[in-house]
Length: 221
Length: 143
Image (cartoon, rainbow over all chains, first blue to last red; front, top):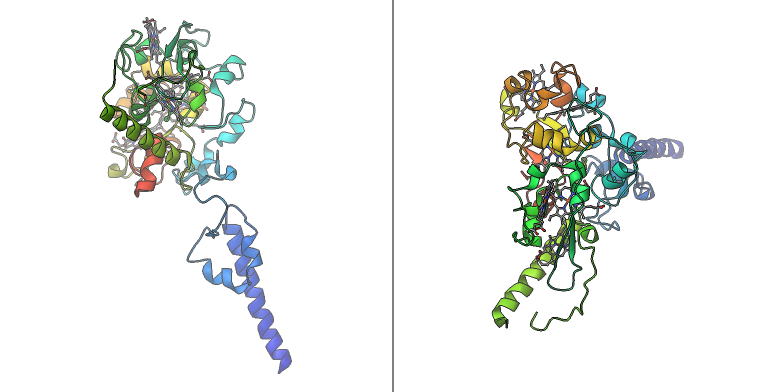
């Protein structure tokens, strides 16, 4: 009798363990939390919540570091069932040799170009064509506490043609354009590229880079 | 020039709103995991029974500057805004300016471009607006 009970118990226990192992394997983050719970519980819970997540996990909304630069098969928009997807290059393998940054692709594209870590073509066919780089900074004074914005033509004309911005996005005349953060967040003005392909809006200080000269206090503001 | 008080108040309100919006931007919801700048193009593909096409900016900008595509080849800065079709591609426009067997592998590699999950709408992945739209309640919505 006792033996039969223990065999039964063992079977249940083993099934539970197997189940939890599967649950852990399914959990991309491989969090140890699941293992600590009674063996049978995660097995039962696993089908309901596939990526078993802890409700009180430290970061509720922030994307964890191990979900950045995922290979196409795991990135959520490519179809893992397609053969083409498995043939594509995983981003991290390309980024290994490039200088990193804190946002976007997590590549510092300006530095990558400067350091010649990459040498993207300026012409579709001619690998030796070089851009006409224009070094002209435009300072835009910002009301309030944020540092002033310096718009550098140099880094832009390394990548872009004048016609990409002038005149459709910006009239080429200092101060002739009304730019606001709200417009940028909505994908207009600087936000046509920043927040889509060029470094995202979260990197405030790359744009707001000039300390205000005078005292900040402007009465009436 | 003296400012009317309500102007100041409106401006304060706007700034507060801005910061709320920025705060949400910085906390990315966890289901957007694809590469920043990946573009899903799906004006016609789903309806024609093909997977949506995915264009990876990171991969192409290692090889070409923006100017090549956005000035010389005439790609507008708008996901899905170029009305790309296979006929245009085989005639050497858009993707076909390079994916022609000369500069890059040619069009018979359907699956390399058409690699999206079926029914994924046209979008710029990880764009500011996409990140803002998700908490409002439409996961992975059109940009």
